[in-house]
Image (cartoon, rainbow, N blue to C red; front, side):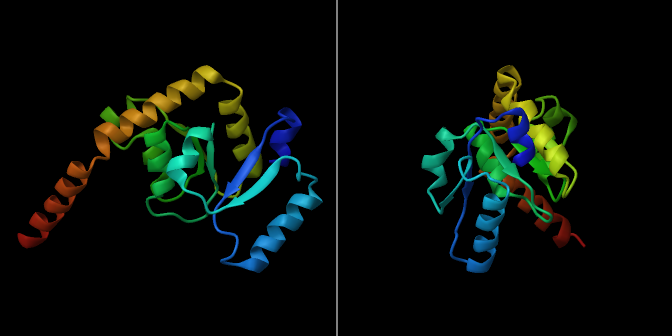
Length: 168
């Protein structure tokens, strides 16, 4: 975020999630924010109801070094919030599409290399600085969830797996 503030000095960041699970890590994060002089920009909000919180967000950033299928991206897509995420687990397919038909919807975010703060900052600035891009990513995310991530599709996938295993 320090890199982002060089291009967008008025950006505001809210780090969402529990602060009491690992007090030492939380302390280190707060110290880093102070060291980088980002206290006016970054707020640790703790645990919140994401359903209530999503309408207030312009962008989600997920810089994990390991993920399976991150629900936060599905939730962000459903809420129409673009995402910048590292290229781990299913992040790429959730943001860019898994099939040709899915990819035709367009991206709902930007994928970056793992542990690449400069590339992450570039993605953040690109989305925040371009309202047209942000709206198109928002629409793509909503469509992706509606068409490819319904409960019915999930159940169909499980049935197909079970059927394949039964036939062996």
